[in-house]
Image 1: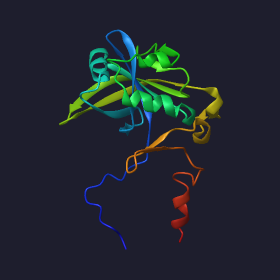
Image 2: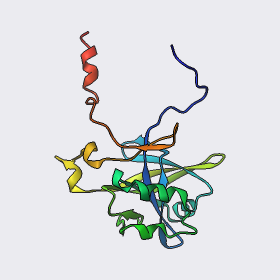
Image 3: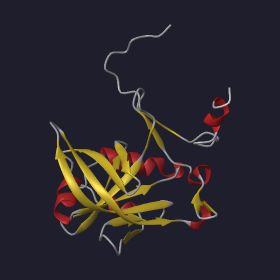
Length: 185
């Protein structure tokens, strides 16, 4: 039997990232778990319009996605609960600036993606930013044969129902492989 939850978004857990933007000439970071893949080279992020980072994303036409590991959960949560307008959140990190976008990135995050702003969609309270990935930086320690190993990345996952962060479990199956079992069944 199933329980009806009403119009409930059940797409969680979502990866948690630190979005970087230059705001008034200074690096700033905000925690975001509302993101998506538009196609292989294009991503989306949804940010409440009241956030300080929105100004920088719109002005510079660039932002970064920094994928933190679970050992950064305290800093990640902090960047989601304080405003860059009042606190220098970049001071928590060793920051580098992307050559291709000019967006600030965090050295400690195993993966950093520089994005060029393509389009902004204004919703009632949120802006959805569509970004073209112009460069991806990755720690060699999480790669095998040039591919990111999720367990080595050890990303932070956000679950909305109980508003909690989770780590990544073990591998369940290979995409586009496990379903082949049903073809001949």
